[in-house]
Length: 489
Image (cartoon, rainbow, N blue to C red; front, side, top):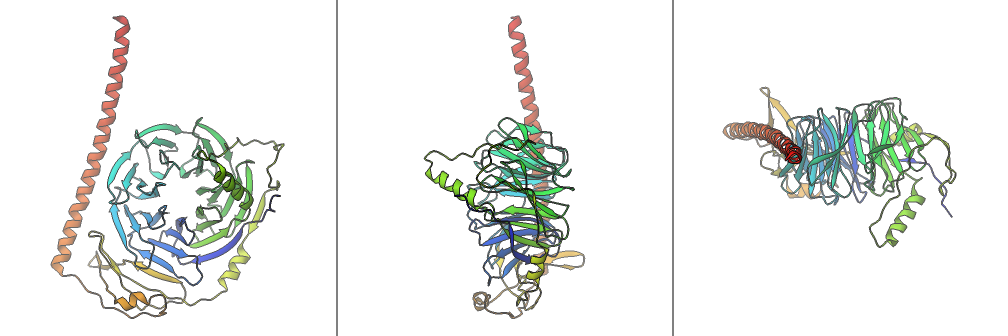
């Protein structure tokens, strides 16, 4: 007997960002939720009630994308400062940083094996890197405008990318070729995602539409004009039966893909919803918006389908497959699934949010620490700032300005301070150790030279790509000429 449907419910309300939330991702074991923001910070929220959140400071501009590694041991963040950082999501705040592109980095994603990193940028390129040493592998260059999103397929063989050139491109990772381009988008592409089966992709467009494409037949399957404003973010449920979207119209919408209809419309954010994500098991989903809030919702309605699907997969000896998504049609299906058909349901969470905000908690704000961008060395420390408005630990590096130049200052802490961080409400202030002027000037010179070298390598890479394309065209033309000449012989 099928379990009765329950509606989504707001479970947690996280308040700590100082600007628009731009991206989020759940850890694989569901103990943490990472979110990035226009405030240049990465927040890692812990689901255990007594665990504080961590604020990682290191980027020099807005953080636009965040992603947990499959193991959950790393969090990647992409920023407008043209860099990507790989963080260890703990109180130490260790990270490595590398300049990934020559312009804003809009998107970052891990491959399912955790070995490769995928980035997309305003420099119109998509790049692949090794996670271990951040070694550059190759670029994908066909887009004619900013690339806002790029994602690996579940089997890592394909890459999907969406751009401001109003196209969605599919790339073969092995051959590095663009195997298909979808033009039926209707607007700029803000986000794109692979279906868990790997057979379909979904796109979020600025014209308010959400589209689902079949990548085997290369055709449009479903087109939802559900939002009244630009759609900013998408996420598939782990079962593949549902799709979640967030929009500038301040709503979240959940789509029943099997029925081809809107399942829920959720209200809660006081402004545009800029980021959404389902957890890895589909039990929860998160949302973030321009109101600087991060919400964690309990899915509830998916439990019967997801558990039945899991049992079926566990019985299969061959690799599991997911049934195809049918085209969206206006007529009602004659055979409905086990879950009962219901009309479009609207849920307001404003009262739940007000009740959560009425709960006062003791708060400790800890930081900053020095994190070297050039040597990869990390020194941890804490300050005595006691703030009772945010339940946050600041971890990472902060910038100070002197003589119109940015300089990083280091701090150290005792071993006892590090061991007792979770039991002390106020930590002791520590003295900053300034670097000698000669060393500072030397490091700035090296940083400048490395920046020039990075730009030079990027230009050479682009020229090499152009040369390869021209050479491929010449070889194709030569082959065509040869085929035309042979019949006459």
